[in-house]
Figure 1 (cartoon, rainbow, N blue to C red):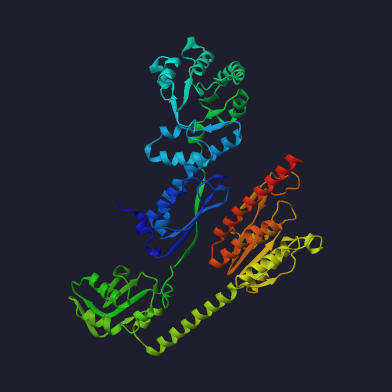
Figure 2: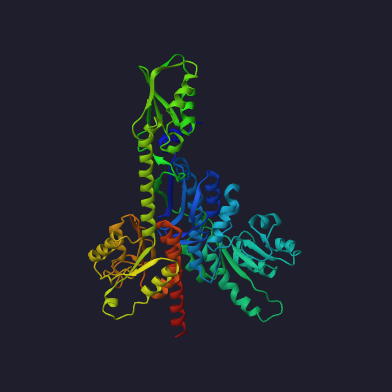
Amino acid sequence: MKDLRDELFQKIEHKKITACLYTDMDGVVSGISSALNEAERIGLIVDFSVSEGTDVLAGDLLMQISGTPKQIAVAEDMIIGHISKFSGVATAAKAFVQKAGHHMRIVCGSWKKMSSNIKNELRTAIETGGAHVRISDDPMVYLDKNYVAMFGGIQASLTAAAQFNDRKKCIQVRGRFENGDIVREAWTAITAGADIVYVDTGRIDDLRRITQSLKPVLQEMEATADYRKVEFAFGGGVRYGDLDALKEAGADIVGVGRSIVDAPLMDLRLEVTKAEDPLYAHGDYDLLDKSELKIEGIFLNQTNLTELAVVVAEEIGINAEDVLVIDVRDGTVALDILQKRLDPSKFIAKEERILRRLRDLKGITLSEEAHISSNGMLGWIVGNDADIEEGLQAMEMSQSLVTQIKESISNRVIVFPTGTEVERGEIEDTNTPLIMGKFAAAGFSVDKGEILKDDVELFSRKLWRAAEKGYSVSITTGGVGAENKDHSVEAVLRLDPQACTPYIAKFQVGHGRHSKDGIRIAVGQLGLTTFIALPGPNDEVSVCIDTVVRGISEGWSKEILAGELARILRTRLKEKIGVMMHYHHNA
């Protein structure tokens, strides 16, 4: 079947497109491995990807890819599907696990009931979220309701399983036997050797009645020689809101099915961030839309126009499909050169060769005045050597000048401390010397900027001036918090409305001193200048500065750099919170 995108993208098929895959939800990422395999199949270059199990916040970058326009369009259809479903499953699994804490084991075995083409990915997603895919990690004999029905009861089922004395025994009870008394079923199961009694009715009251009746008996048996640990499991339509009641009812293991495997998709979006001509060999130049070439004084008679186009293509050094005959009339043939960048050395002064070869083609007659004409660079085919040499020298000088400017700018960094506390000398600025030292050690020229006040207008103006002065990197520390005095991120957004501003932490607006919904960092660009807004605490700057230097040195995109910094800083924040909780717990 014909793909309309081939024709749709024909005029831009030479472009290199860069696109970023973002999440619009908080959660846990799963499905990355299959997404990367799909990207390879499509032929994409993966510039960046998060790992399986990465915790993300809404707006985070998951993947950066580059390829042709069609490849990017295909990626939007194919790659998102490999991540969104399984990330939704992993996110739901993690929510259940966190809610259960250490009190209950969350199990999801529903992946086994799914289509074979997604079983493995579902199982991985469940485990990525921290849930288990089996009721027990130990070798086990599992006697579900149908096994029990086939054996005719609880006792007979466990008697048959007793031969596997090196395996745990798990059996479902549903109140079908023992005269419909589910408590008696559970007791029969325990006395017959069950290690796990699985209440599979979906009624929490059934579990509560069993545990209230039998746990005291089991506690009395702990001192006997025949005692063994018995666990109680529960399943059947379990929802997130049931976990507190299940904990109170005495569940040790909770089987969750639909609430995990049918979890909502993680909302993802693919955004094109850059469309550029690919990197060409030295000496190739843009035709600047002056792509029409005319052969005048040419007369045709049953001529094969494809052969004519092939001659022109071969002589100017491009593929035949990139030369299109667009008009034939009154002794003139007009051609359109579809490839927009050419190497002048391959077509300079080629007029005579082209005309000579055309004379040899069947059905073509050239007049004595036959010639080739074109506006712009293609006019060099005619071959006025002086004009050509002058043009080439001018372009070489221009390219050299641009390169020199970029190299000069790329080596200059300025670091701005921020905040009233620093300005008043109330706190020592330990960040600026640290950052300057790291960049200097990496070979950069580094300057210290003035202390920026808590004023978004002044803040953004100073950053603008840094760009005007030719700094390639402008770094600020502090002012990224959730209070109304924090303006670093907003200042960067004024200069680059498309700046990447991932969250480090989220808050409820109006709670305490929080006038904004969270702590964010920022990485933006204006021309050749990259703006980076980092937090103020020195320990946070310390853990991420090496990544900043590496990202700048290696030319990471703002999306990749911001994403990596956010992940590092979130990890650091979790560590700090953990230490604080440990301190208060032991105080």
